[in-house]
Image (cartoon, rainbow over all chains, first blue to last red; front, side, top):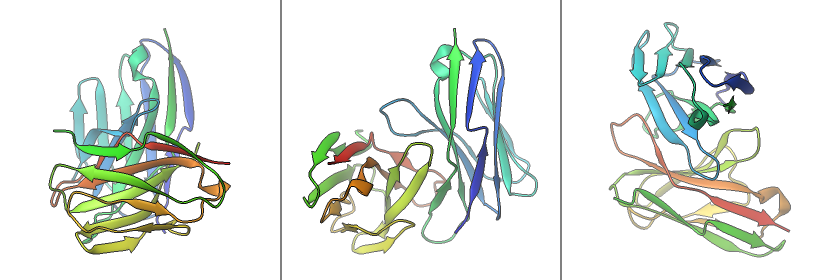
Length: 112
Length: 112
């Protein structure tokens, strides 16, 4: 099956720092998604990317769909304590079943 | 709108017991999914459905069954619970043409 490699696995940063995480795939995706999961909750969509090269922002978050369609990154600027959580990338290769493949997640800890 | 609702939120089962995890969505989405989340492993697809009456296996279907008699409901059945099924289970739904899935809050299942 398809594999998504997400890195880093975890990050410990100070409040105010910028954060970057990325995902790479062994195959092409038509859509890249970034989700955040708070403790005890389900994942919530942060950003959706639909075209190769697309750069999209959502407040302090910026994500890009790689030109090769095999990678994506997420940046968080000026981190705050509520940014703590697990961030997942997900890819959709298309097709009629709309299945998503998820990365293993990046655990972000922000020290106030 | 309630979105995707899962019940129960927590459950402890004994080995060999059976149970059904309930999932319902009120967004009239055709596509519904069951994932399991194990620590550090991301989300693995168990079963999915592209519409009422149609289901198919995902990545890790063994030990589970599903049915989809209505658009709204997609229950997941565990027939003979095993310790390996201790996990957090997430139900998700997705509309046609949208690139992303909406998740429920999860069911934390422990098999002892």
